[in-house]
Length: 434
Image 1 (tube, rainbow, N blue to C red):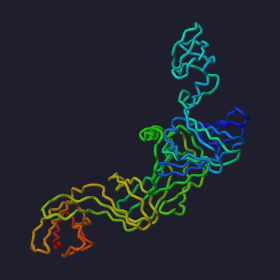
Image 2 (tube, helix red, strand yellow; image 1 turned 120 degrees about the vertical axis):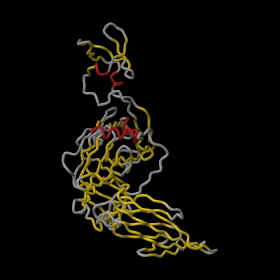
Image 3 (cartoon, rainbow, N blue to C red; image 1 turned 135 degrees about the horizontal axis):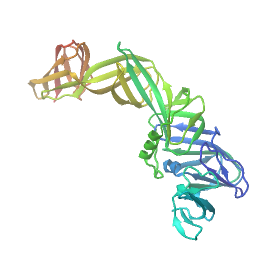
Image 4 (tube, helix red, strand yellow; image 1 turned 90 degrees about the vertical axis):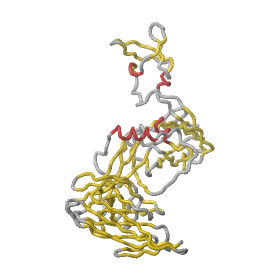
């Protein structure tokens, strides 16, 4: 029986080996494919085995995000898979002589126990030392004392297949910037942030980005800590040396798909940022607005800074930053939106546009109540501003009437232009069935 040990240090590969030998993956092999979603990723790696035993050793950072019930070998039948805790690199040096650098002096010591770095010195004394003070005869891995987790596959026979698994430690997200120049012309651009929360450096031949409402049902995650990935991502500050091209693919049952047209280098514990898209925009509007439910009580307040546009490309959900006059005016989050569908959002209060709303009951009977609603709008702006008011009664049988009022289901909608430093009054009637 041939035994294969696969160490996931980068893009994963497996070659034939004789009994009791080990095959270690190295970087630079472009054979791993990534399917990146916004909360997780699917990793797909071709492997070949000439024996009936396959051991995969996982560094702790990769194991912590792994969804274990997703691990599989496609096209390579196996009898069972066993997950267990394995030994770390340092434990393999127990009983061997090493060099201790201490107080500017060198001495040969024996590593007795790796877990707490217990050594026996030249005087035969046992003591603990710092790992950083030991010199090794070979280059140690980045986390020499970190325990490795092992997945062992008992194969039915030799052959080739694909190692597949889902992980929360890899993901991507788009982020948008909406820039409005002094003339009111909008420009929407997007970047794609690809996050690697593990200490593995991936060299990827094929990368696909997917966006949409994709939910996972898992019984457990192996000690995954989302905050750890976030901290690792933003602490590294590593970016791609050159932008990659990203092309749109046909959507898959409501899931938007994009593919990188060149190989991707994804460093350990990093975020790689790539130019994503620049959709064309139409029907862009910046206005002061108010959306509220009907209430028979008087009230007053200010309107909100609201925006609306349509894009000619599908937009995956992501954070949106708005800049006007080269100044940041707010951030929000948009949901997945099909081409040509409106994107509406609010950035905050507009203290320059205020309203006083008064309500008067005109009539009441056993079948209905009639109210008169009056809005007094006032602007402190130096230029005219578009205003939209929406008041929802949540009753499709309601009757609405008044100057400039449009009924949409159970909502009264008013659109107007408020003059610079001016006031406007709008009144409408509401008849609500009892």
